[in-house]
Image 1 (cartoon, rainbow, N blue to C red):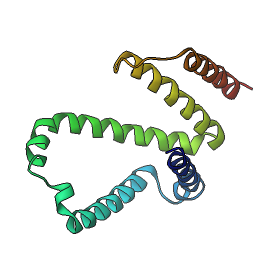
Image 2 (image 1 turned 90 degrees about the vertical axis):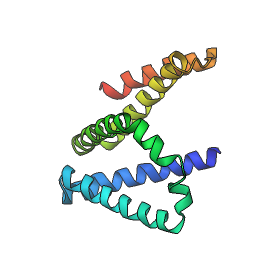
Image 3 (image 1 turned 180 degrees about the vertical axis):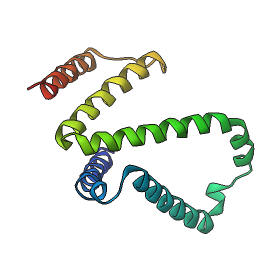
Image 4 (image 1 turned 120 degrees about the vertical axis):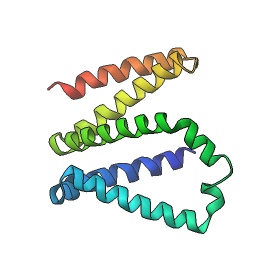
Length: 142
């Protein structure tokens, strides 16, 4: 599994670098989000036509009705965060942004896992979180 995580990380960083160095110089954030959402919609529509059972089983409509409000809230927050991410990407050094974002995601994921999902944390993981906090200080301040 670690090789898939590594592949995902390399691809994500490469696409983020391309977005920062090229796409955000060509398009404003609203246009970029519109284009990328449209492409995603088109690709998912093609996949849905090829394999409709994966997209449309008998639970889809009832689950959609039941969760409509939550989905709207979730996507609205996601859209706001997309604009925030594009702003940060355009205005921060990529090395600093990616490092800080990764460390914060790690810290908050562990804390929420402990608090909400009642996951257990080892002493080694506690030391890792403390070192992550130290890394924030080292990355953020010159």
